[in-house]
Each structure stands twice: as C-alpha cells, then as structure tokens.
Image 1: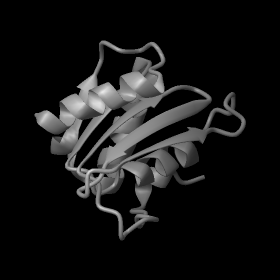
Image 2 (image 1 turned 90 degrees about the vertical axis):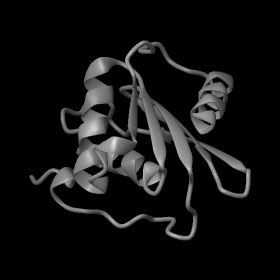
Image 3 (image 1 turned 45 degrees about the vertical axis):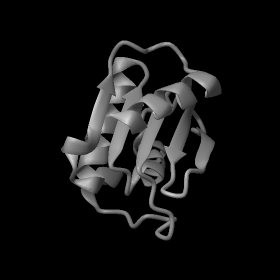
Image 4 (image 1 turned 90 degrees about the horizontal axis):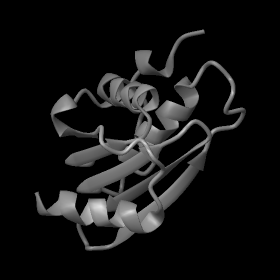
Amino acid sequence: MRSASLRRRPATRAAVHATAAVTWIGAGHALVARSLPDGRVLVRELFRPFAAAPEPAPYLAELVDELLGCERVLVAGPEPLRLALEREYVAIEGRPDRLRDDAADAAPLDRRALLDRLAALGDG
C-alpha cells in the first residue's frame, strides 16, 4: 500500500486561507486550531478510526489537509506521532520552514491551551 505522503493531496477547503495553526496529535484523535485572516478561529477535533491500526497515513494526511495554507504551524504531541505528522506535512505541503515544533508538550492539550498557543504563534 502506498503512503499518502507519496502524493500531493489537494486542500479540501481551498477557499479558506488560514494564517496559523496549532495542532495536538494523539494516537486516537487530534485537535486543530486555525486562525483565519478575518480574525475568526476554527477548532476541529479529528478522530482516527481503529487507533491501534499500524498504518496512520490516512489519519496523518487528513490532519495535514487541515493545516494546508497556514503560514505557521505548531505541532505538539508525543514524539513519534509529532514527527510522523511533521514528515507527512513536509511530504504533502513541501514547506518545512512553516513548521514549529513543540517538543515540550507531549501531554494532551485542551481547547483553551490550544487557543493560547495559537494566539502566541500569531504574534510571532
């Protein structure tokens, strides 16, 4: 089976251009907060079906779709998942310069913490 990272996937929301995003990724779900140019913030929770399955590529590609078009992307979560998401992002988006790694936060982030990080990322 080919990994999703071997092909470029089109953004599913091409009309929405986020400026920054913060995501926390876990084995069974991920939270994504995105700031939009008009000042709104979108927060989504994505679930990975069959979290114990060995092939996370579809889950990672779906999460990358949420991050496409962002000028800055902060990724938090346990190291193996965080690094896998960062690799998938670079394979699909081709922009490693947009990634900000949050190695300090492997513990789950709640909605408030995600929004706080997004506000700080938007300032920098």
